Image (tube, rainbow, N blue to C red; front, side):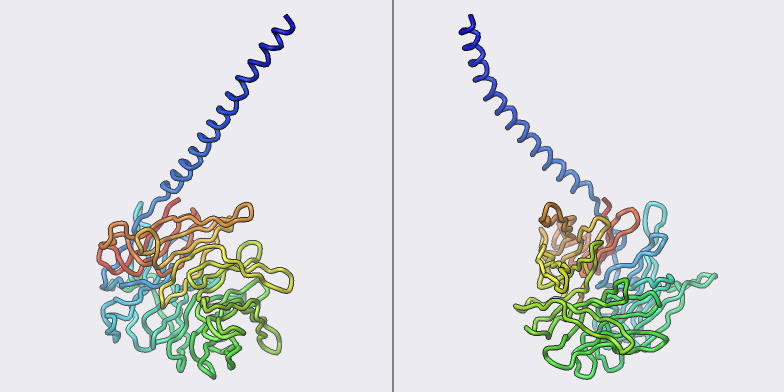
Length: 416
């Protein structure tokens, strides 16, 4: 009996173990299917919609820059062209400043200011920014370079289409040919910093400061090994140092990441990391919560990690191409994910919104939206040249330069 029981037990075990293995494999397959299905449903749960299609008239045309958000969640931006005319004929109109505000479950777009190409400048190409005191600042570019400020509207609304408030030009970029590129930055004292790709003693570009009512150049390259052509603005840290990218110059003539540090003797520049190979870095930089920096270069996204006295450069993803005339920064969310928009590429070749997530030592890139599935109409927009911004609910906003109901670009929203 003992022998038979032993044989029976062994036989049963021989059958049970393969069944266990098969069952385990089946569970693993089902788990992987569920993971893929959940990921797909999560991606599909994100809703894209157009908040405004530009008409090419008084509301503007072809926005090249991203948006700013006020405390109430309203959006502010600029268009490269459009308006009622002005002195700019190619393209028609010198551009506008606009507001997109909540209205029930929808949004309403209101023109704030029309550039006319005289002493107010024209063709704004960089995002407007809110200063710490809540005042809106911005800049204009091609041949009409200005730094401007917009104050709140009067108590009695105007009946004209452009009724937000008063535009004040703070400075003209005479001799700079083009004026500023990239976002403006503010320190805790209210000083404003930015970059121009040209100008300065040797026309190699400048880093400038607007302080106390006057504009001054705090850095400009003078030799081929110096930094040249800063295009993406600067990013301040909590100590008042400024970080940015030169698109040319440096040891390998391919640009470098710089730090400008203030002192009683002036500003001191330091080369943090040099680029080589001709893949031009074009964007400004952003910090994550750990003090790492992120930027765009030659279609790729890179990370700079501080390792003591040095900064290591790591390629972490494909950011696609930027528009030839626009240099949008990336955006870092509260979880240190990196987000941005590509001017081209994507599933339909008309750009995309992407996200880079770090986990277990690796970066994973996902696409949040591909523009122009209905090519060649592109009714939902095409070719974004802007950065992307978040509101307090995690909704993502940006602009496109083309497409939309009238072909002049859109303001869009992605809802998680």
